[in-house]
Image 1 (cartoon, rainbow, N blue to C red):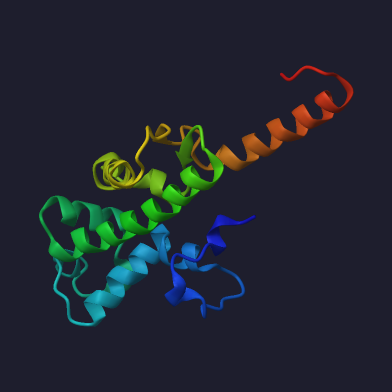
Image 2 (spheres, rainbow, N blue to C red; image 1 turned 120 degrees about the vertical axis):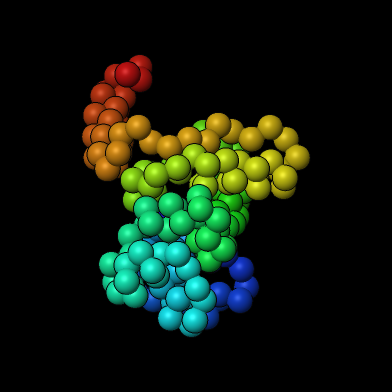
Length: 168
């Protein structure tokens, strides 16, 4: 499976994209930045626009977080939308797969104040919906090496356990 191709709701059943799925397009750090830039192009004001002197291509994710800390309405709104989309998918994971732990990784790891603006609101959303104790949710400590380390561990363990009955 590929979580990036997850569809959030029925309105998105007509979504067609060959290289990226709905979830990756909209509920990713790249999607957050694009939503932010599109809102500014539509005339929504933001502290970030002034910070880049109107050159929207110079907007970086950390600027959106910093502006949210300063009370920028657009930054806070876009972050809330991102958190809500991530929360919906994590709720599905927890309910469908009886998840024991959730580790978030990727570009999100590079954001300042990610606990305040991403992790804590996600946990709050999930606790508001799920009527039982939720699994621990945290950020990966392995940075961008997460997939390589996990795949290596899986390959080693599958080779060993196929010939030997104990797991490392």
